[in-house]
Length: 249
Image (cartoon, rainbow, N blue to C red):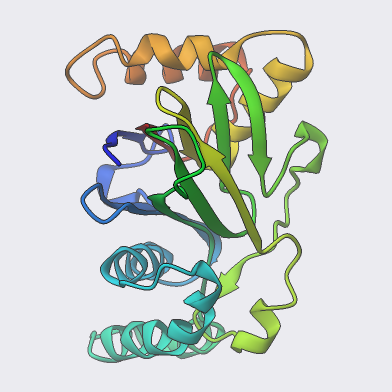
């Protein structure tokens, strides 16, 4: 199973690079990928997002349903890191509330022998509005965990740094899987871009072909940054941190 991936990202307009609160981690060799979108509420959300994705790709479990069993260890790392910082006197309340993020983890494994050569199986775990799209020749085969543009809102489901695993397990549409063929694309992206893709798709457009055009440049960001900024200018894309991961099977 040979795959190739590329990542693109851009902070919210008006924010500095150190205010970017999405996080991405990938490991083509093991077929593990993760993307998290730190929520504006809470504190040290960028740290929480980074710990979530780094932990996911570092693990070896094939079954993503075991992800919940690792959550407490990640929460402990967040708490230890924050506890070691010198904070303002009024920060205790916010630290006690914790940090929150939308999260999507993806694992690729070789398909069974009966599947066409070059096929692979994907498994995903998701909480919130960071989305995975599976396309083949610019045809959308699967959208997870949201599959309509009107499902995006101001209060997505999130995973918190102080949230019990039992609470996380009650979130909707936590798991999904599928089978990809050689030449397929998997797109993982945070909410603003995911909503734009579904809006364009529902209107009869071809957002996947437009995304493919970004890959024509060998340097990440050559086309991505001006493309995102132009959509922000037109109002078709919300001004938010934007992160895109593309995986070519």
